[in-house]
Image 1 (cartoon, rainbow, N blue to C red):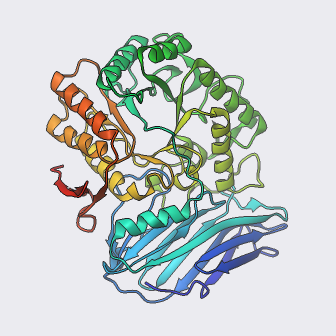
Image 2 (image 1 turned 120 degrees about the vertical axis):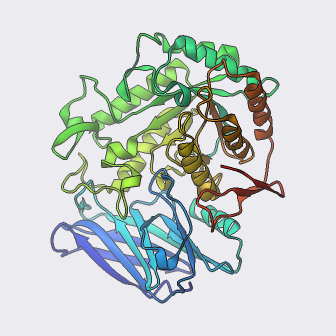
Length: 499
């Protein structure tokens, strides 16, 4: 697993023949800073390769572009031909090695690690085309290589994640409460949100830290898209926020900022991709002003939490589950501003949201994980859990909590998603285990349930909220054997779950 950072080959790929692109690397110990300059060339990719031989019995775990999709696991190197976004950890169960790029990077970077060495692909594109640097020197990425004389994989990865992020953006208080999606699934009203809030306030009785009541997709006039004005079932959104607060909870709300039918949006403000103009282009000044107005309106209503969703698929045309080495598979398109890379454009969009939100809590859902660090306090690390399908909760929830837990508090707070309670569709003895694990995980805890759940469930939920407010030690144990770990070490004791 040991290799020499200085011993690599590189290749530059442009829209056409590369004539004036210069790639510079500055190596300082176990760190490489990669810079790219070009005048007329339109740079697409930089390839770096370190050739060396590795033992087939090494286990490897990578990360994900955005949310994970029940696909995180340790694989033996001989079976590991996958692309791994951002970073990876490799271990022979005696020592560990980590290699990746720091958060907030200005390019999309993925890795392949095989028995013949390591290959890194640095994606500098703008949309599906090469970026127009026009003589600018781009700091494309900072690579960090760390070796550990330890077999404790979780501690090694936890330490490595701390190394990767210089500016985690964390909330001042623990974040928990209700989200109505996983029992309502888009069918709700002003009155039902008040009922949901009543449940949260009762469950949190005696806890000084107030719970949130997050209104998910359901409140706006169009399903999953703007304009961000209330439908007839919700009416006055400011009045609703005020009432939630008066009841003793904190109001939160869901939006999809880059998908909007508002008639004032011109074609020039939209991305032109695959022959269509549909999603908003955040590089256009008029779009930026429009997004700012949307957030300011919601903030003015009194909402204290903004969950912004779908922006990765809206920006790049697909979900992470369908991608491998690159963030977009769609060729021959570009943003309004062609001088910035896709990563820079993504970061600028997140900065805009953060700047306008001010002291609001921000949840990034379907945002880019490595670029969300420092930009959101809470990050949805996995695809949806469910109030209908236990398989989704087990596979998405437990998998992402286990294999991305090392990012918690090092990048942001990891939101592994809700405990969804919809009647008795999912047996409570199963869902209660997910509730138990989340309550001890030191990560945000959201439940999705109507007010009229049984008293026994309310008792379990109230107890979970109290457990949640204490600090715990936790780690998954059977990570090499199980993609959905069943054995966890919690506060020094092994706990076995029957998923």
